[in-house]
Length: 332
Ligand SMILES: CC(C)(COP(=O)(O)OP(=O)(O)OC[C@H]1O[C@@H](n2cnc3c(N)ncnc32)[C@H](O)[C@@H]1OP(=O)(O)O)[C@@H](O)C(=O)NCCC(=O)NCCS
Image (cartoon, rainbow, N blue to C red):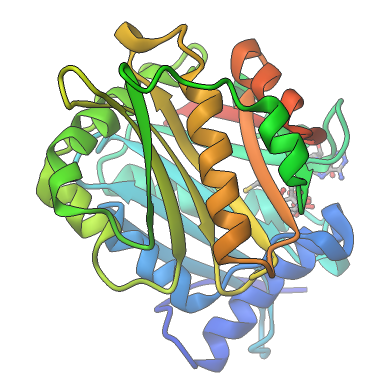
């Protein structure tokens, strides 16, 4: 089969864009089964500018055909970590193990190199602890593993009895929790920018160094308070004596998968750790999710397997491990 790699432009409602996405979904289903995560073209186009990313989209087609056999996107950041690119790549299950993934990855790596990237940092997921095709593929292509994450799922609803039992009972003269649905109050934004800044360097990254993200109130406003197809609920903890926000956690629900809430970031500022604030904000956020979105049946989260404290909090809430994610790096 004579193959061609083509660059295309993603557009909502465009059949070529939908065919490109269908390859990702088919490959994902082959790995995870019917519960595989889905995304929409609309969301992909929404995410990139919000995260200060520039994405290029590639397909592999056989000569004389329009039907893609493999799909990929390169991801470049423009605000920080500008030299660290990402690649999202899938080969249709009917066409795997014919060198197509290797061909497309080489094209993506060249494109990132041409655009000034010096390394790639990406991840792959597997329902199998020891890894699967993606692990072997990454190793075969010269990537080194930097970190392993546990994927954990919590079936909903969690009963009010369980939530109350887990509630650490904060001393309300010291800390209170506050929750916002779908947009953040203006008066949170300055503090929330500091939390986002710290978040960008506090989560474990293994042996790869990433820049601190330069968050300010405007960036938080753009990320969280501009219209988006993605629904969000956030809970913060406020330190009462200073009035400062010192912890936060987010859950997101994406329109392509309205029964799944994905845990985004959770952080407690170092100087306020040890007061059960992580558990308190997570429980309050879960309560809000259940109240606002009773259609959600699962909450999903990922944590570095070395982040034993966060994994222990999750286990107390009823999460169990359903997958393993590996983070990879390669110098270009
Ligand atoms: C991982 C994936 C992209 C590989 O695509 P592919 O076209 O089958 O890969 P290639 O044929 O180029 O494989 C190159 C080498 O990788 C390794 N490899 C790839 N798939 C493998 C598998 N299922 N089992 C073992 N080794 C595998 C082999 O060393 C292979 O060389 P070989 O066939 O000569 O033994 C494809 O399986 C896929 O789309 N998976 C789901 C999506 C995903 O995980 N993407 C990566 C993260 S973004």
